[in-house]
Length: 272
Image (cartoon, rainbow, N blue to C red):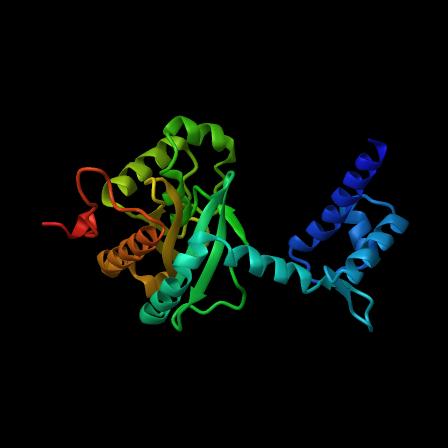
């Protein structure tokens, strides 16, 4: 029992060391890791040496600074390649980004956050970094709103207390009353939008992805700079594209539509 506890503690400490590299600093000194983890210097040095031998971190030969190694990339690649949503959505999202020139993103819900499974950027929406693996708030994104449609109002309040509905810009929805109204509209028309709710100058259109049981398991979005997405002119066009893409992925996951009928791919705003 004592041995098991010691092994568990060693694993937890190693994970704590790896997690410090998620905070935005790509390279760290041993003293930085000590300060951020609260571990002792000798323990930290020993853990970094072990992680380096396993290629989870690597050390610059000149500066002596540590950064993440190649092993996490290998693990991440294996994980996404075995994810059924990623397998069904990857090629479709890539083609969508190329055709529209905008970003195409797919995410799932992990607890109270969304988790990006993949993203591609078109020539009109370039990024210098990838979104895959990042986590974002559910209430401030189009993808997150789609994922919240899988929960009841009570479940949403339990998952995200109102004081956790942080405002990132003046446009962010910061009360459940506001969020409920927004989600009612999103559910009725089959897609969600986000305009500068998480970051200034960005907007998106997103649609939910369902599995064979009809449960919402992921969402796909089309995103980019506010002026390029231009929802005031292109909402119907982009909503249709997002819904059709989500439908294709859903069919690949075994979804055949609600019992007694099929779901229209035409956004509500376009119906006459």
